[in-house]
Image (cartoon, rainbow, N blue to C red; front, side, top):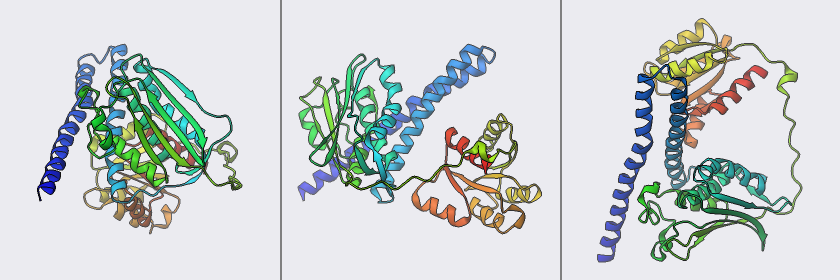
Amino acid sequence: MRTLAADLSKANQRQNEFLATLAHELRNPLAPIRTGLDLMRLRPDNVAAVAKVRDMMERQTNHLVHLVNDLLDLARVQSGKVELKKTRVALQDVIRAAVETAVPLIDEKRHRFTLDMPETPVELDADANRLAQVVGNLLTNAAKYTPGGGSIALSVRSEDGSAVVSVSDNGIGIPPEALPTLFEMFNQGRHGMDYAQGGLGIGLNLVKRLTQKHGGTVSVVSEGPNRGSTFTLRLPLAPDQPQAPQGATPDAQSQGERGPLRILVADDNQDAADLLAQLLQSRGHQVSTVHDGTAALAAARALPPDLALLDIGMPGMTGYEVARALRQLPDLEGTVLAAVTGWGAQEDRKRSREAGFDHHMTKPIDLDSLNQLLAGIKAA
């Protein structure tokens, strides 16, 4: 009974520490964003100052998006709702994608970074995006917990039927007592040594869970405080078999692109709708905005759009209801419907498909994803 009480007390303490850290981590990027808005309001005509503030706000917003995505991913993995989209991939390509995400922080802290990979492709049956997320998290951790001007090394090798990926640094290291629980959720093993480094204590737990879903393992060694650390992934190599031929990708230019698109934006958050409309208009498209489901249906009937970006949680009619109604109208058979929502779990995507949506985009919309969607419609 005493053991159970102690375990519950420890779990409660970790949860409280996590909530305090979450508040801290959210306030950190929000503070400069708010200050940046004040500066832009006070000095709107200073082009250089506004450009500098804009770059800062972009970095801090990306940090916020990363935090939220980590939280959502952990919830999905815990509930078993993450389904890996495995294909035959070259591990070297995955590593390059992961390095690209970590390079800004590595450069910012002036670290020396070395990459050692074999020239012969190391092939895995894996979800390339999720695996890049795992390696990217390890690289970001190494950069974060290594003082400026430190060294980080990433190596790849094949060994006994496994691909072995090692990420080493000469940073603050890990106390021996923290090693056994380092991959547990809400663990703050390294944060206790330097709280200013930040982090939610969920990144390594997410690394462990995603690695296990790939049939692999992750481990760590450290000689103690200020002695650096090495994280090692072991992943099963793909069995020897010929790869399926990839289908040819149609050339957009050969199909002939259409002119400006007619786009309907429907969102009950007026600021979000107006800003998205401005972004689309800056690319030459004809955009109309509405702020509830009933108005969205009426606007689409009056002037059928090429693309409708519909929020899900709208008053009057939900985005699902609007999509179902639009799919019943013969004049709108060619309209591409994209759900724009904060809900991004697998069942949310399934529900949007069943309602008639062609695409499911989570907020905040990624500009590259939006550009790909627009290019695909224009080339169709």
